[in-house]
Amino acid sequence: MRKIVLDTETTGLDPRLGHRIIEVAAIELDGRKVSGRTFHRYLNPEREIDEGAAAVHGLTLERLQDEAKFSEIAPALLEFLEGAELIIHNAPFDLGFLNTELERIGLPALQNPVIDTLKVAKDLHPGKKNNLNALCDRYQIDNSHRTLHGALLDTELLAEVYLGMTRGQESLLAEIDDERATELGTEGGRVALAVRVLAASADELALHEAQLNDIDKASKGNCLWRQPDALT
Image (cartoon, rainbow, N blue to C red; front, side, top):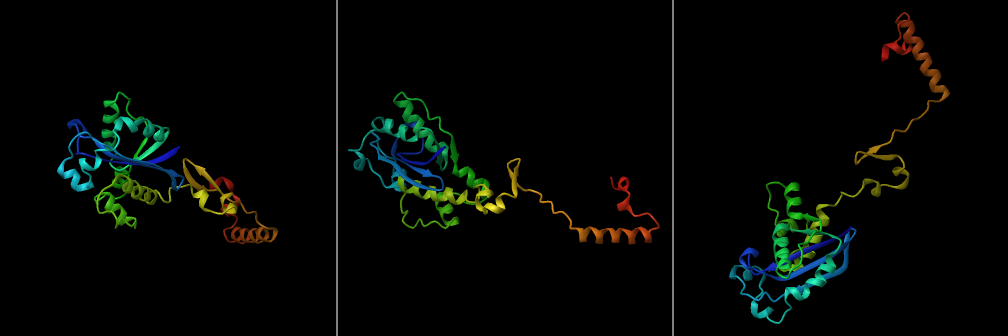
């Protein structure tokens, strides 16, 4: 399944209070790398932007007056997202805004499967800061150019964070050479070593038999290895 990293910027914190999306960005992952396919739009929210929100992303209504409205970009956005698993940091926030915007223009809510990287990060690093800046520091991702939040920049950083958090989750079979791989099997979703049976040589069998003779003699015929029923 295709994976798409997605982020939005908004006029405020709650779509139920009439706040709107002012920037949406999505970038596609191709396996373990960015594919180069990107969707990015600034939007005219048709309303004022909260002062606190503007301080975070630096966008103003004056800057966005000539941008498209959400209804105008929705078809292209939905086409880009179709059939993809979405990777979002704090997914309820972005999905709440996107689904409210879709409802406003008479379209159904998104049905894509979602990976919430905030939840993943909390599971991996309980009790620690797990915002995007903290995760960039933890996974040694350069975010020095992130002076303000921006949907496109944040998707690029989140893609690197996601790849960092999931590094090592690929099948172990892909990371060993072909000869070694033939000695492995999978059981219950885990990798397990297959048992290799090495037959004893004739000389080894003779030495073993001599050892049993010595034990049998010393124990006056009570060598357990010659009494199979005693070993069950």
